[in-house]
Amino acid sequence: MNKRPLYRKENTTAHRPSCHSGVRYRDHRNTRDELRSEALRGSMHAGQRHGLDYTPLYRFLLSRIGQPWNAVYSEAVDRLDRPDPIFRMVALDENRRQAYVRVGDSSYFSGLFVDADGILRAVDPSLGPSSLVPLCKCCTHTFNGVRFTRRFPG
Image: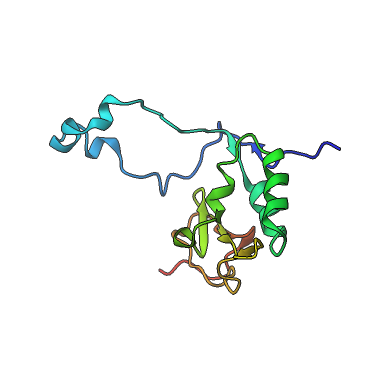
């Protein structure tokens, strides 16, 4: 039986809010630090892959909390183009555990880890949409697909 992939094509032609777009190039163009930087000599878009949304993967992983990691991992890898996005959310190392993971501008998901028995677990099961505060008031912030209940302070 062929199952659906755990990623989807993202609409890359739509305009997105630019409230967290990063540093503007005009503010640091031709500065001494930039002219000495090795980054100017490399590829302009090295390692970036645009156009794929892995939200179905993250929901799949959340639905498999409490199940054996080996079974979850093998099913997820079979339905992905590459295994890297799994480890944005799942930490195999104790040092890499995070309570939540930010995906995109305003989407957050629970951080996961594999315990000593090989079971997939949430890093902080008590964390919910009422635990986090939005970074701006223009975006709709979500935690595990549920809208934040707290408002932007200010």
